Image 1 (tube, one colour):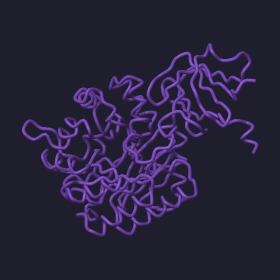
Image 2 (spheres, one colour; image 1 turned 90 degrees about the vertical axis):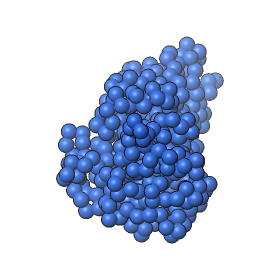
Image 3 (cartoon, rainbow, N blue to C red; image 1 turned 135 degrees about the vertical axis):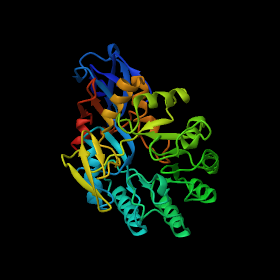
Image 4 (cartoon, rainbow, N blue to C red; image 1 turned 60 degrees about the vertical axis):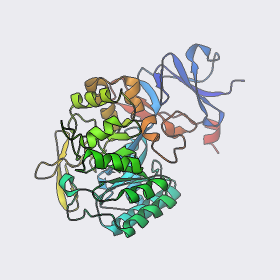
Length: 387
């Protein structure tokens, strides 16, 4: 008797690292997934034939401000987190770090509490928190409220360390102008992913922050000191370090495809550069306006801007980011998919089965060849589903 509950054939398969052709995604007893050459399947085993496209793990997005019409800054509740996660799940994203942008200490505490409760209630897709600010540079504030930006205090540090004790994954975006190397080291030693962003710091200061334990950069090229002939800035520091990861908003708007291509060339195409959506309330929603800290944000032509034209997050979903990397930047399909699956997962403290095809229904999605259509695979063992 075959141990195969179902086999999916007819599509390429990306397991988080490599693309397989003429293979089957095999669902065994207990929903254990494996790959086999298609011609090795036993005759008569249950088979579902897909019409091309790609099977892959669900995407991992480490910067999600909102979705489904809601912003995390506006509503720090389990219900809001569930709505946001579901909006992104519909686009193939299996795991997110809900992201609170610069706000008050009280809202930061509420956000941490909500994420802890959501994880306790097993809200699908919530795997930790990303606190983007408030310890940033006003000079590179972007859409963050300058009135809420502040230097990190002992109280702020204690809040972050408490979050690291309570949550599986914590990511913090800060500017080294607003946090000391000693504070960065304490955060890093506690298992927090310290990411530099919204900073005007010079090359030497950024290198010192990396040496202290910062190991990521938030939305590379955006809201940071740029690389110049005499001052390499954060961009230059990032590209020359082989131990630093960087999130990238690949919507063709935040960063020109040629600039992305140059960055990949500078670091040998390394998958240290991973994809984020920086998605706002518009993700999975038809809304045309929303607010951040009381300021209106407008949606037009796949851009989100404040009234003065400042970009305010991205009107982006992960499948489009992958398509931009492949079709406009020239990234290989294998690498583009890694940047949305295994590459961001490598930064997390607790990963489970994220970023790879593994046991369980939630890990596998099916994308069309042009990434415009995506669906989850129904792969659960019928015997187990009845229990």
